[in-house]
Length: 362
Image 1 (cartoon, rainbow, N blue to C red):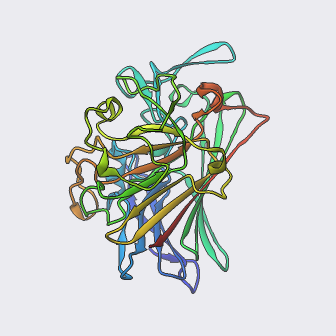
Image 2 (cartoon, rainbow, N blue to C red; image 1 turned 60 degrees about the horizontal axis):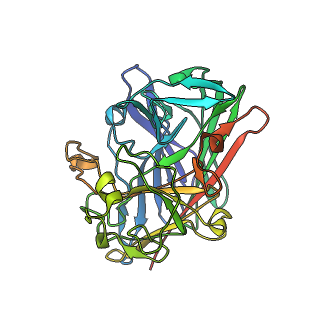
């Protein structure tokens, strides 16, 4: 059954298939006045597709994904998902909170990755839709019980996706806990501005508004060092083609990550929403995506672990470096570097964050 919520057909809701639990997932299609279209499912808060125009006015889907919710249920790449409670790796799944050691569930060798085995990306969220004159939105809510994947506190999460008529996707995150805990939320869409099925992103140009980044250890944890990007492969203070360094195995960080996979510490002006935090440009199609955020750090990840074993939308086989992720998060900042205190959530201080993805052509 298809539900149309407006004579403008800004929002369409339809079935996205059945989960292994027997529950039904929904798919929400948001369309703006310019014809840009975003599809979101309430399973995992996942962005399934983003259709946007190139410089010749042709539409293409610029994010990796699947045609069926069952594929997302089995997905190990976190394609398009809301990531939490904690985005990133926690060594041995352990951290200190208020002087006590907390042990989380492990879902990776000797660590917890991206919130655990059944984290926010594997939950069925409740959804409501809304629209006004200039935008349409889907609001997703999920209450994570105390102890889920080992995290203390019952946490009520809300994520709002809004598509505007100026080709902006605005993502807002809210979280409220009943006891002290930690959270680090992000959005894990894989972008290929040439189209999801167009091959690798080596020719994409990227800029990140950050003078410092965090080197990673051989185990892919931040070393604790804060390093200037000057004269390094990680200098994206100006638009730079990924191909310049992405295969430079003489660079220790690129060798460890099999490509780019680090935290950048955003400059102060990049956290105001007035100046961009990151930008990706595909000169072939002319598409540009500019990211604005209020978060202190950003991961650039170049899909280094996609191995060609997964078939995506239209049964297209995604290969290594088929996309890039730009993941704003609060896990690190210039004052404390990597410190779990950056991510503490208390009952007295609810969490709020906002990121804007602006799509246009050059």
